[in-house]
Length: 121
Image 1 (cartoon, helix red, strand yellow):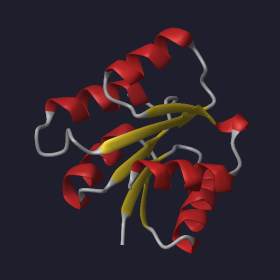
Image 2 (spheres, one colour; image 1 turned 120 degrees about the vertical axis):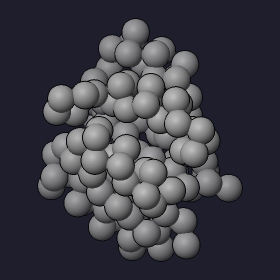
Image 3 (cartoon, one colour; image 1 turned 60 degrees about the horizontal axis):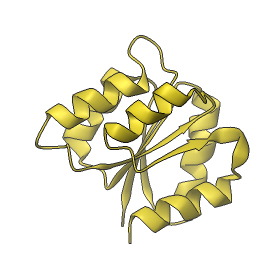
C-alpha cells in the first residue's frame, strides 16, 4: 500500500483529500504545517508528498528546501497543490524538485488521485 503525506493547513480540505485517497487504497498522513510535515516525512517515509505552498510560519518552498537538504528523505516525490499561482514561486518549487505544481481550482479530487498515481508507477 502506497503512503502519502498531505501538508495542507486547511484542515477540512486536507481531510477531504485524505478520505479521497484512502478510498483509492492509499495510506494517508496529514500535517497542518511545514514543521509537522517534515517531522512526519522523516518518521513515516511516505512514497509521495502533496504540498500546499501557503502554510502558516514556513511556507511550502521552505519545506522543499528542508527536504532537499536531508539525504534520508530528499528522494521523496513531491507534488505541489496550491491556489498560489505566482510564476517565481512555481519556478523555485520545480527547481527544488517538485514533480508538478498544480493549481487546486483546476483539478477535481479524482484528477488529483490520477496525477498522484501517475507519479507512483
